Length: 434
Image 1 (spheres, one colour):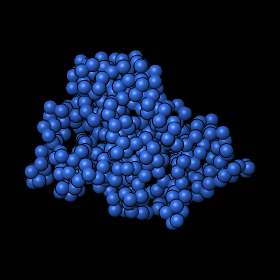
Image 2: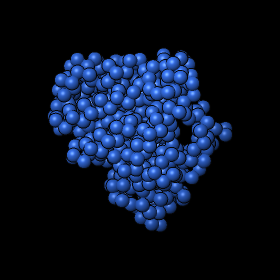
Image 3: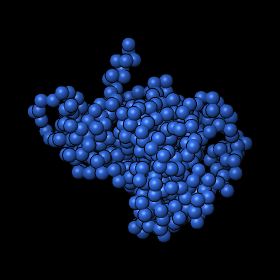
Image 4: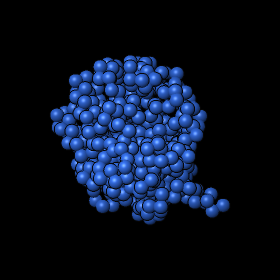
């Protein structure tokens, strides 16, 4: 099938292209980019007034499969991702059982090929059973195609074990994705430590819970030489530590999630567990430094940490409800509304942080660019349309978000993966009308 995307504003960080162009797709590849292309094709998409970016890549997604498919599964998570503009997602391994062996990696890979219209990459655990006692079969999982190792959901507290796993990851040319949380400092905390937590009589989580492990992991990564990717950074000190590590020439990248650059603990509604996430919503000062870091490219990547839960789980009280927010279907709108439209980052930076930079972290050479010859993974966005987020329209099983009812700007109109349209907003509207 051939496809021509007409008159869109094409933004490609890899080639520094930012211009009104046509994109011709043939045999699943970007065949040609140019002005006013005259080519006979099977389908034409009018992208006038739209942004045409390399397909978005989310490095941090919980698909809950195997073991927790009542929250999400590969099929529904992939649909949610396509609706959110993502052509590639990276699944975390804290499932039941955890993804700590080649066979378990293969389970997800095979199922994704059968059920997903986008690329699903499965990470592997740092330690066996996520118990933190000995490294998992990192070599075997590397052979099965994992893009990274991570213990997401917790930190490996045994530094010796963690260092051994880092050395194995380096040997296998894999990055380490770090969830930075000193469990000995958490002490049952369920929101940011501060005046609000004290007023609500809830145990708090201090910035040190995150900062201590960020510092440790940067030091270990420097010593072992493994590429380190810091997940869901949320504190002021993260900005300073990542900036210093980059200045020192270390292989460190870092992500920020939309909920952390949009909300603070001041925005929380007492008793509403949709505001409960890990790391927690921090202070206005922390948010300012996250935005500053995104503007200055200290923070390289925007990821969702998509963490769907059932309604029943989120109906528990604040201390007992699970941490997490469903984020795949709101990420683009929040990034545009909170960062691009106010002038904090540019459209080019958005494409860098949501596609090009993530592709480099996981060494996915065919993604992250619209250069001729690359795989035709493309996201088309209407940057100016305004609407209200409605969780009832989510493709995800998870409706757990504090953004339901929020007015936003910017919407994904098309998601194209491997040259095939896997999501169309116009089709969704027509189905809704029926």
